[in-house]
Length: 286
Image 1 (cartoon, one colour):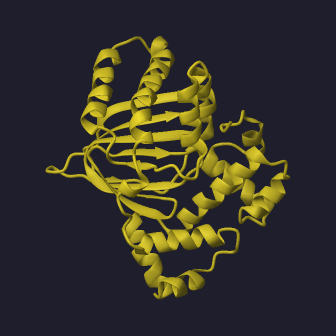
Image 2 (cartoon, helix red, strand yellow):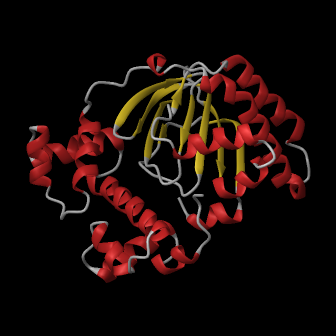
């Protein structure tokens, strides 16, 4: 999640990687775009307080600063093979400028609230082949060529998915799982993250005791409710630092941290730099 990593490596590819160990990811976000393609595997993802099933052939697109949580079922009889693309959208947009249609499509993916971020029907066999062929052709190239290679791949990738994505009807989106326990808690966090956390108030919403609420949530996700709350607050602070002229103290207060010193400590721990250092970095969003 570190902002500095995206600046050092503005386009990063991890193609056709098999995850053999049991897989349980934590709720997190990145300052850049993150794209997953599932070659093999089944699981679920939470994004925008909705839970979706994912499977082989699923493409996931996460916008900058968009918290998400992905769990995949991994075992001897259930492999998980995925490709991961992470990049700085401002940096990559420079490569797109000679291609107006692709530039507009990319801008839509990064900024439109109507983007269908979980895609299941983008010609999975052809997309799988595109990624695997590129990986075989270029994985032995010198490191010095990586950035150019990665940019060329991204251009090819978006050129391939653009007509498929734009023809994908909203009615075809796989239905979300109905009001699961974790999603109800995430919706509550999204509404009340600016306020002092009261476990009793949250427990009342989900109709469980405070202790049982905490236990079930941690058993399901592997993390505590306050871990998820912290990520939501970090997202808000990051966005305010990047898009407003509010003082750092005001940013902390609007993000759920009335104590200025604690806010600065928490931000540095989770983002890898102080709020002031973060604000001085080039913006990730156009």
